[in-house]
Length: 225
Image (cartoon, rainbow, N blue to C red):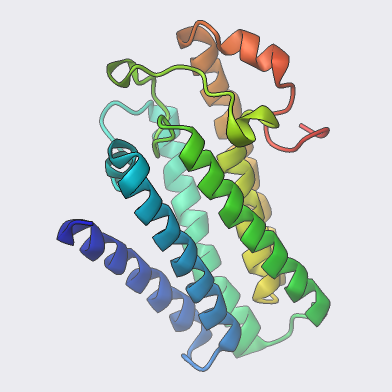
């Protein structure tokens, strides 16, 4: 793994940790450290496996989420997503530690751990299955993009987004933050808008995608949507 990759990942995690513990106003926060370590373990597994299995996808995943060839609507969605994510990172620590008024039972925190770990696993499986899972929405003719129907793509059409939903809600429960749960719902709604717009692009640009949609009925949650 190159030095630039390590520096980039270290910088992102340092920024995330600074916001998380900055919102809490202290580093003496066990749940915050537990979330950070889980996130770091999942990220390192994905980085190592992508370096071995799909270095081109790793290079794409490390690029910024706003790019030149990205549709304007996707830029707006991603900017909104980042804004809500920033608010989430600051708010969960503030509520859970500084205010401390959340009434979530400890059993829901355990549910949050399970959901978060499930999200990490689905995220990992989606990245291993789909070499075209880049951060932005665009057709990738230069990379020979085609429909992926293996791994978690056998169950829903957007398993990576399913993982993001589990990660966001799971982290909010783990940190005992009701505000975090509310902001997670906002993130999920943004993802749903992105899915609809992205599928319109794929239906018009990938010849076999309509057949895939007929075979795999659900976008995000099996038997729901």
